[in-house]
Image (cartoon, rainbow, N blue to C red; front, side, top):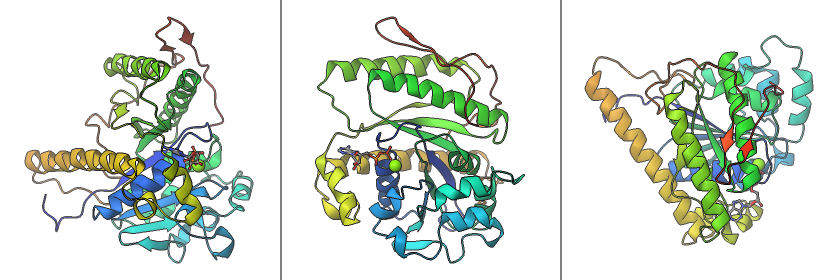
Length: 329
Ligand code: ADP
Ligand code: MG
C-alpha cells in the first residue's frame, strides 16, 4: 500500500441493545490496539454513562465540550471537542448531559444525521472511527448507525443473547431501508468468553450456522461472521477502567491484552489486504477519505437489503427464537 495515499476511513459502530456485554471494553481496547499499530483512531462515546470516556482517563465532569455539543451544533464539527489520549488515539467524550440531547434534537429534521454531518468536517483525519453505542435503540444509537458503515456486535455466548442478536439485526435492516443504505454488519465479537462450557460452544455453533445460512440472502449481515479470537473472561479487563487505562498500559501481559491485540491484528491484516487488492485491481480509483464515503470490508457493500421477515435463529435444540419487527428507529 502506498503510504502517501490517503486511506479511507472505517466507521464502525459497536452495538448491542443489551448492557454489560462488552461494547465499551471492545471499543476502547480495539481502538487502543489500532492506535498502537500506528493507525489514526477516534473513539466516539455515545453513551450518557460515559464509560468509554472514563476508561480512557478523561473525567466527564471536568471537560468543556463533548459529543453533546456536536449533536446540538454539528456545523462546528469536532474542533475543540476532541481530546488527544495517546499517539494516534483521540476521543470525542460523553457527559451525563448527553441523555438530554436526545430530547433536545428530537424535533429537528436532521436529528438522525447530526453526528454524521459533524464527522464529515474531519474528513480524512482518521483511519478508524469507533462508536461506543449506549444499551438502547434511541436517537444516540441511531446517530451512530447513520454515521457508521459497519456494525460490530459484542456479545456473550448465552442462549438468550441469540434472541437479542435477532432484534439487533432487525434494527440494522430498518436503518439500511431508511436512513443509511450502506450500513453492513461485519461480525460478532465474543466477549467474556468461556470456551470450556458446553453451553457456550453450542451457542457459538448455532450462531455460526445461522450466519452461514445468511450468505445466500440479500441482507446487511450477509457477510457477518464470528470474529476471532474470542475474548476470554479476564479480571484485568474489568479492573483497568477504574485506573483510566487501557489493558495495554494496565496489564500488557494479561490474556485480555493478548486477545484484543490478536483480534485487532487480524482485522488490520484483512483490511490492508483488501486495500492492496483494491489498489491492484483499480489503480485509477483513489480511495475517498471522507468519513462516510470509504469502503467497508464487504465487497458487496452496494447491495440493497430486502425482505421484512422476522430474523429467526434456529438453535441446536431445534427451538426458534423469533423476533418481531418494529424498533425504536
Ligand atoms: P457494555 O459497554 O456492553 O455495557 P462493558 O464493556 O462495560 O459492557 O463490560 C461490562 C463489564 O464487564 C465491565 O465492568 C467490564 O470491565 C467487564 N468486562 C468486559 N469484558 C470483560 C472480559 N473479557 N473479562 C472480564 N470482564 C470484562
Ligand atoms: Mg458501555
